[in-house]
Amino acid sequence: MLFHSLQPLLKRNQDHSFSSVSLHCHDVNSLLRKLGADLSVIQDSILIGCSDRGHAHFCLDLAAVDAAAVEEESGGKFVDLRKSYFLLSESKAPLVAKSQALLRWHQTHRFCSCSGKLTQRNRAGSHRFTAGTQNYSYPQMSPVVIALVHDGTRCLLGRQASFPPGLYSALAGFCDMGESVEESVRREVAEEAGLEVLSVTYSSSQHWPFPNSSFMIGCFAAVSPAHSQLSVDRSELEDARWFDLEQIERGLSVRTPPRRGAPAVTWFPPKHAIGHRLISEWAELQRRHMTSR
Ligand SMILES: NC(=O)c1ccc[n+]([C@@H]2O[C@H](COP(=O)([O-])OP(=O)(O)OC[C@H]3O[C@@H](n4cnc5c(N)ncnc54)[C@H](O)[C@@H]3O)[C@@H](O)[C@H]2O)c1
Ligand SMILES: [Mg+2]
Image (tube, rainbow, N blue to C red):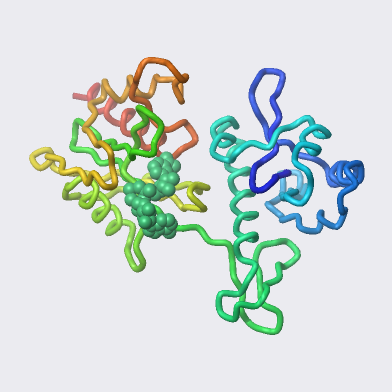
């Protein structure tokens, strides 16, 4: 899987969907040869895993090679990761995200944080070390809690000023050193919405490549309907509101992201974001709860 300055190489399929370009090692070799590039760059490839059939998969950043020439030769295009993530299918996006995260980690950990000396990678690229020392470093993710707060009949969504217009998601925040997941959820919800969480239930998790490499821990957080008055921290969130099931269903039906120039609508993160998963899980539980009453 090829990248250029951390942008994955994508191609448009005949059915107008997008996929990442996967080339065989000898194809990469002949591509580099054609472009007159240094073939030893292939040794910078990082192992990202094995297919079910046991084929090893690697990623490689061709930052030292002319991007336009690679695009022309391969018929693909290097696309910014945020854009790529939403162009790719739910099954393809995580591998591209993982690859970019590994490449980014290697590019930003060239020096030992203890001695300042240059580090080396092991052959697979699973860690780096400083020659002659016991200093090893491994790729890291920052834990982030993402909590869908609910009060029995409504759920709480917020938006940061940096979000695209109309996008609302569950509240999220980086875990502080030493905190448990439950403590992080309680603190984030109190800080951002001024609410007291009564109980936290784990839902699911995902690796999220933005802003660097986050480990998203998805939870539901229950608050009392009698204490659901919001006190929104405007320095963190531009807005936060309660949504009932009908409003959530309307948001889930919006094609994301809405086209530029389309009328303003409320919409939610795309399917492969854990925010979407939490919102649709809550809607499903709420529907079941309403039909059983
Ligand atoms: N996958 C999803 O569905 C989804 C939905 C919402 C948010 N997110 C992600 O969750 C992340 C965290 O949410 P948030 O921005 O509200 O967090 P937040 O509320 O903790 O606020 C962000 C601030 O936390 C500080 N911070 C503390 N530790 C940090 C670290 N390890 N790395 C970077 N900044 C750190 C920085 O000052 C940063 O500006 C976002 O980067 C976003 O990409 C993902
Ligand atoms: Mg936050």
